[in-house]
Image 1 (tube, rainbow, N blue to C red):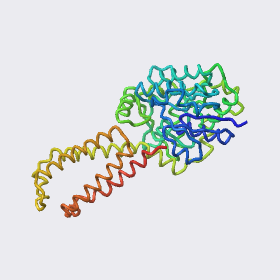
Image 2 (cartoon, rainbow, N blue to C red):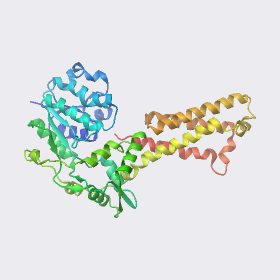
Image 3 (cartoon, rainbow, N blue to C red):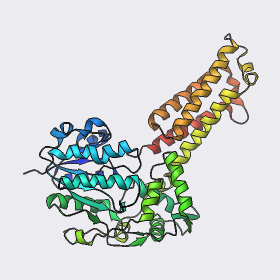
Image 4 (cartoon, rainbow, N blue to C red):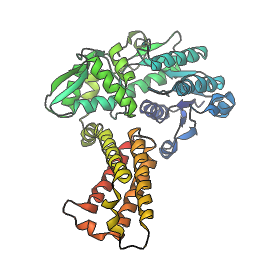
Length: 419
């Protein structure tokens, strides 16, 4: 008999490891996520569902996808509004579990903290307990690839000269490899583990400071000076990260690390046939490649590029709105259109540039904003070439600067594509 499973959050870092492991283990896997096109190209049967969308909060939405199937719920939010948290962690899962044949919830360790993330994780666990699911609480999940918090750790480890860390760096981690976690999920589907939640992690304990040191060594980089950050500074950085939508850089992440990410995995591991490896084992299992070093170094460059573009559009917008007309109207004196037209065009362009700057600051719809930026830069370049072709010959670059700006936009949007 073919075993069937629906995996929520299948396009995430943990979710992808789970669906690949379960498919290799002979399961009939349906991969569910908000965007499923790439999962389909990977050969998976897919079911598109945005768990924050109210239409997914009714059992009828899930009936065809979940009847006769187990569910692995690997979906979750780190930061969001209460309505989004409730949809993803409570309402959609509660509806999906109605027709399921049991399953596994991937929760998180340390959720007795006083944060919105921890609060909604606890509520999500309550829903899973009512459905007789096995609940797993992993600590830090690492892998051959990285995403979110693990990408940030690699990036901090790759910084030149210093290695920043939260507090004095003595917080204890016992990371688990994502492939090992996927194997644990498979065992829990085959043999459910009641009376949870169950912590799961690796056998090796390591401090935050030592983990960053080991990651730096794995990347082949020389030692750097540790840079402890007080909680005040770390939380300030987290607040800035939230305001600018910088992914794992958030006060919630700071709170989780401060509260602790060590798991008490022994009770569950004693029941498993495949034991998780320690971080020392899986870091030594393969060498870091060029792509690992590039990703580590580019991860923090991504928001820097975005904010650089935002500053560029902000300056352009302010100039368009407030530059005295006598500074640019002489460039159009040879054209038949009236000065009022050019003045309105400059002011309107300034407003458009400011709107782009605001969207970039919040990282709103990066793909769409990249297309808008490319279109506007090309339009500006063509228009000014026709109006005043001598701008290409200015000593400091003039219109020539638009060529590297176009390249910068393309590099930025490439880095924004994390999936």
